[in-house]
Length: 388
Image 1 (spheres, helix red, strand yellow):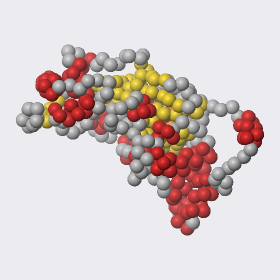
Image 2 (cartoon, helix red, strand yellow):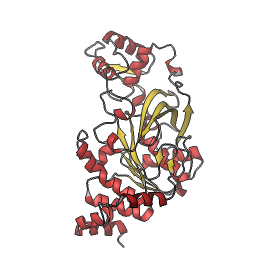
Image 3 (cartoon, one colour):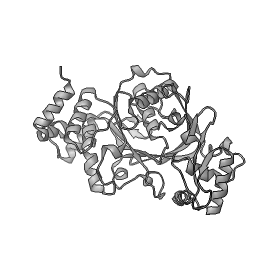
């Protein structure tokens, strides 16, 4: 017997234009009404609520962006579990309008998604099998009429209070992020679908690599920050990985901006570890701790290191590739809040990190020929650390 979605797909192929208008935009895609009618309709509606207080309103739409490996997917997974289970998001923010969640997770595959969800559920003492979460391990192509029809049909059937798309670069493939109008064309359809159903929509995005700006101003491209009514950005304050257990601890500043909320920043520490770092099927665990502003920048492992050495380590650990003195210097040049380091200072820092067994080297260890990479990035516990 054919599924409803397979039948829906046939329907789209038979007459996609008509069906998109009816399912996605509705019978009146551009409603115009008298102001008095609009005011009366708004006044007669139930009092507005937050989805997650005090940042995301019921039925709102926005972006959650972060720098490389800052934990966007963990944040989105936490959000999905929180809304579906009525538990606080990030252990702090109240879910005021709980309900079903539709999660499009385009990175990681079924096993990693299942491990993340189970880890977050364990931290809340929630059985994941009982949660009203619908999952797709692909993201819909936002300009595909067929994909939008299928999304609209899914939302119409299950009425999620929250739709998550992770990440934008897969959903908006082929679009020029620098073109505001092109990004608008990508985002409008899914926005209309969710608004008609009263579903909030949050899309995971990335920071740009220029190092310019703070918070939402670091979002890559011209359209996402203009489109979102709520903008969430995560920046890394410090990282630490336990060399024996493989437990990863990251301190993040979460920045919130929106057209109806005050700009706010909160600091958290997120810890992730696996029962057996060598076993990719072993249970993963997750903890979030709210921290005081200014806390968390000191890492016990960095005791005795010069600030320049800590900076070099942070750069090398941001990627599992081999680094040269020059590429490390180039990465530091993107940190607008700090001055770049001289090549000799970077070399001295690398020597200390090699002696501490935090960095490995190869080639001729000089300014032009040496290469270095993080020891941790190639250890067996990479799954526990990098499942973001």
